[in-house]
Amino acid sequence: MQEEFTALVSMREGQGRLYVVLLNTTDAWPEYCFGSTVPTLTERTEALSLLGFEPVPGAVWEWTEDSEIYGDPASPVVLIAAIRVHAVQEQVGR
Image (tube, rainbow, N blue to C red):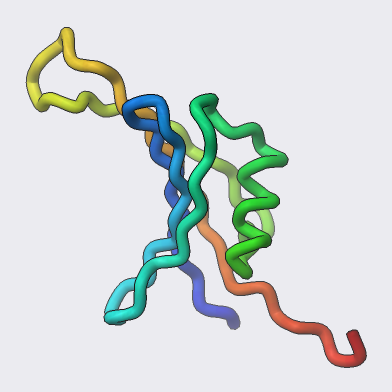
């Protein structure tokens, strides 16, 4: 069974960022930056592929929102999405 990781997309201050959380490592987390709009499903999938990952079978993106300033209902919203992913395995003969 392949090791699974969590990929996150955050939209903050007009900038989108996708990164894969690699726990128990000192390596930098793989990261991809988007423009100012919320990335589509296709854009997120392509970004994961560029980073060498793909969603695990049956996984779906789960969206939530947070605020930049905790406890302030007038604070700008921060959108966060998460999905379970695994590294793409190289196929023999390719």
